Image (tube, rainbow, N blue to C red; front, side, top):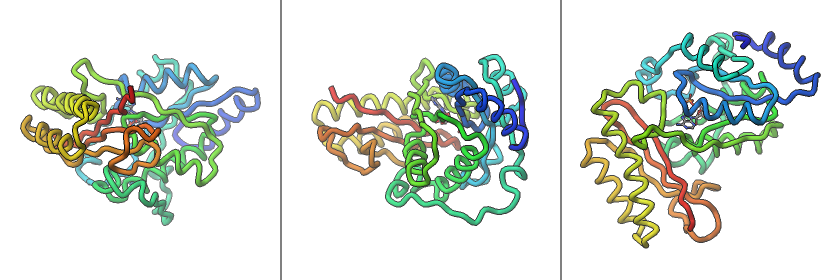
Length: 282
Ligand code: AMP
């Protein structure tokens, strides 16, 4: 596996493969890799000749300095995992390569970022859009892989691709979970054993809420029940929303054709976790 720290040598490597007619898949990450990331990677390896992963903890998408500072960083371990998984190249740019100067461009997503992560992490999606656009330019992939775990992020990137005309096909890969149901996340590393047990209530709450909606419960009741359940189990919920998966509009009609999802963010101690469940219409 080749390791690149600046875009020129990466582009040289990739253009040789492109000229030979090989397809290129991109898997962007912030490192501290887990099986969720590897699931994106295995999808990319199945569908492309060459797979490039990136490891970059993007400062412009953090609105909380402590979260950025404490974000787990384990480059050597990540490189080994990528190598063992069969990844062909990894791009690990330092900050001065990604942001040689303070970016002045800001990217807004209108009503798509008015709720959930956009509401509670102001500026977050501007930072995501900047870094993803830079990575698309550096790699020019045929396909790029993102996780349903960050559902709003995926939909925002899909809008970015449509609005700016990036020539890339996006793939959204289902959430990879621990045996307890807890969605895998790099931030889980920072949980104590007791917090990890508590965090599993997030997925339980989503499943229970989906059942109650299916049985005809009103969203207002289900939302209150879900928020209360998290609080009673020692978590501090930030939001719990019911949205249309195409438009992210709240309070969707489950039966009007589009997919709908339950999305939640909650603190376990000082660690903020997110999760979601796309509802089965059957
Ligand atoms: P991150 O390193 O957290 O920025 O995540 C990099 C990519 O992996 C994003 O597209 C995430 O949505 C995806 N991802 C993170 N956790 C999971 C998971 N548990 N299952 C599937 N994809 C995930």
